[in-house]
Length: 131
Image (cartoon, rainbow, N blue to C red):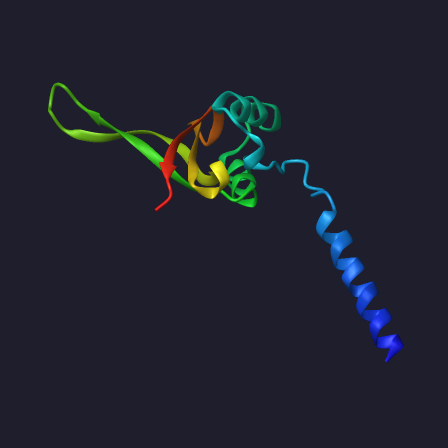
């Protein structure tokens, strides 16, 4: 019985140590640590160089808990009056709870693209009440 208890203590300690371990992914960040769009934008610009492929950025953002998708602006041809699609952007979304869980920030990060490569990054958020 004593062996079983000591084994349980060792297992609990191992889980505790594993839970406190820093994420080894150099592209990992904690969204809850950011208080302003500028902080997040600056961090992402350090992590993601201009010219990085869209697929790599998409995967990195998903690993950090974001949901992503391509969005294109609607363009109106003034001569013909027809609608068309503009260049696609990669938009990623995630929310974090703030104010003791009573509100949340809904973050949006837009990656401007040209030929499937990042040319610019802009982050922003809006506040939402829970409920």
